[in-house]
Image 1 (spheres, rainbow, N blue to C red):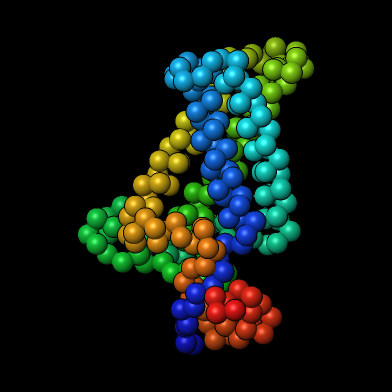
Image 2: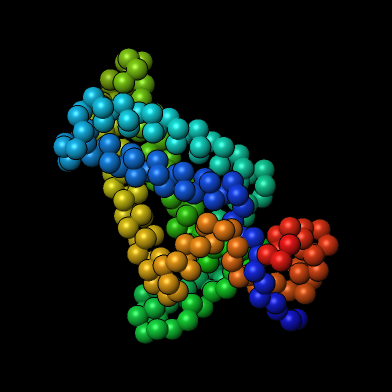
Length: 221
């Protein structure tokens, strides 16, 4: 079976808009949240709370749309972890990357994320982000004067969960940005999330299917 490396639309327009909007909102939340906690003094407490609240509401709406999009388009399949090539990729990031080795994983039509990426993104989407939601929404209710029923649980416990989840997001962002500086150039890593196109390994059958049924995915079209 021959394999063709083709420049293909990997990240759809909605996915790219979602990614960059989410990035901007997360940085806004981290900045305003740190101001609320007094870590930075670049804005007042009331303004920080207002900015944090509105950014959180917009992000929740964006996440709802993104979840709907993932489920209805089948894109959720790209986030399912697999053991295939997992240890090769883990070894590369732990050791091979510092020896100048080539990345052992190539994007395919059915899986655009390598096994380590898929596992990390799934962890973020199913544990870290829900922890943000489940602790942040009570905060929103409290700020709107509707959180009386949360008194038994304790605002301090909610704050602890929210802060821990926020720290986990910071760690993810740092690791994400760091990995963008490894292997290929930073621009080459970021470019697919701007243009949507990236090199993908396709079998002859997959290439024939795309040319016949989804030619708009090909760069030349």
